[in-house]
Length: 231
Image (cartoon, rainbow, N blue to C red; front, side):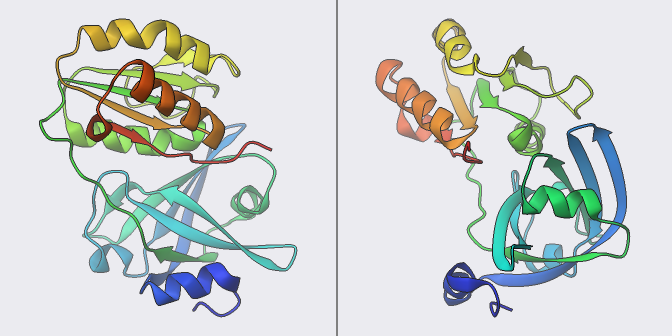
């Protein structure tokens, strides 16, 4: 299935990535800029054990060239072979496909590189920093870690987004300043913190460096991954 996917597809094939065909079964416009698709998994969940923040690469065509983007599985159901995917809509091939998707449409997906390690010792407080692109992963993470205290700084997005946990809403462009102002006090009251950051690449790098170097959070108590690149 790597044919027609360029060098990325060839590399993934060499790494023994697994390919699956997903089929859209339902579509829900959650808000003007946020859309949910429900899909059958084409055998994906039977072949890959489910874990928190599990994600897949979807393949699109962008001006005739292969284009892949990663999306977190929402409510994966191995017994029935179904899950949902949520799209923070913007300009681009992935959002264009999601906007036009209808029940019966199919999309190719690749599983490679996804994983999750529970922090040890277990955290006494989870501190998450994200935005609409990482909301499915934030929900998955906090669902999996159970009923322990959490603080979430969330940049942008409409109030009707599918938040499963309480968040501190932050206007666009103010996330770094808000986290710098508020995170130290939360950390000071937390004996075993776990900091999870997933924003655009630049913001993620800035905040990860701040958490490690300025606040002294140990590397194994911090997860940071850029989920998208600002234009």
